[in-house]
Image 1 (cartoon, rainbow, N blue to C red):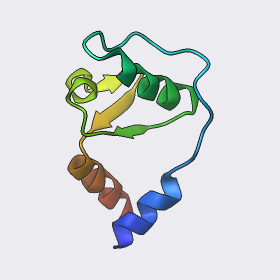
Image 2 (image 1 turned 30 degrees about the horizontal axis):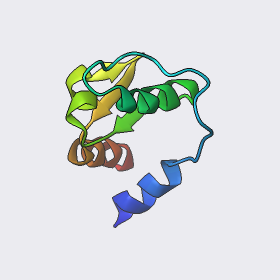
Image 3 (image 1 turned 90 degrees about the vertical axis):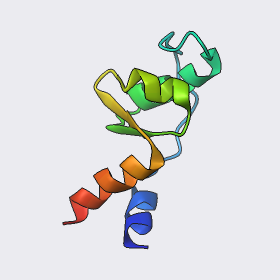
Image 4 (image 1 turned 30 degrees about the vertical axis):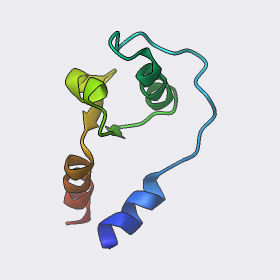
Length: 78
């Protein structure tokens, strides 16, 4: 529960990205998430989408599964 509370404090609502990158060709809709993360200074993008996970990172933003995201966030709590 502590990790979830910490995670919700990290989440931020942001406007649509000004530009949408072409990082993922197989599923172009997913590119919006890379754009949102890049334009808003994200350090971590948590997703279950295989196309995003396959690129592993975008502009130094690590892309991880939800379980990996919990591990990363948990490491900050120690």
